[in-house]
Length: 268
Image (tube, rainbow, N blue to C red):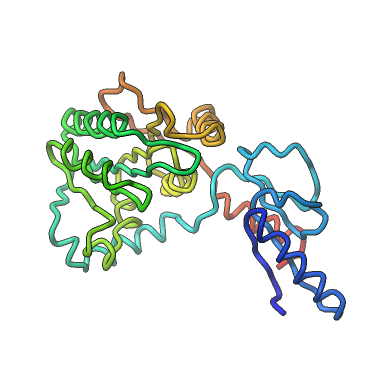
């Protein structure tokens, strides 16, 4: 039997409890940790990690509430990624002068949201104008959810000093620059459709702007956005913004919050 089971989502909750109960019959103790609402009795788990934007109105000593998504990004991991990336052929192909770097993280549509072509065009054109106004370099990274149609709009709308890291390119897959680009960024613009992507940007400690319009984000995503705006962890990218303004936020690591709770409950 394992010593610890970590599950996420409704379907894995049943499996986690089945293994824990089976081990208990043989007097073997298993710690089971669950991420997100298991939609079953919370007492079946040693620890439940609940994102606040899920709006579960229930309190228990085995619950730890977080804002955003869990990740292992911090300044140290980003510095190491930059050093490693500097040794790759992809790094040699791009020009990274000593100037402001605006990183644009792009998601895409999901089963509950739609990233329409017009919004993508607006985002790219607006980002390029901001980069020109700031004499900055725009570094764009798409994702697996960015459709071929949206990728073509990105390529046709780009202008000025930019580099597009297309995740579909061979060089990208061999030398994934994602963490390194977060490390060299001065500013990050992230599309609102991914809580994970925004959380990773926040953990970088950089100034964050969120682009969201029409049906790009779900209600759950927008609850998370509002929490970030209210606490000055991020700003909304709207049409009135001509230049990005540097801000220093104090977004704390949610991973550290979880490990502290694990230790307090003597689960580790």
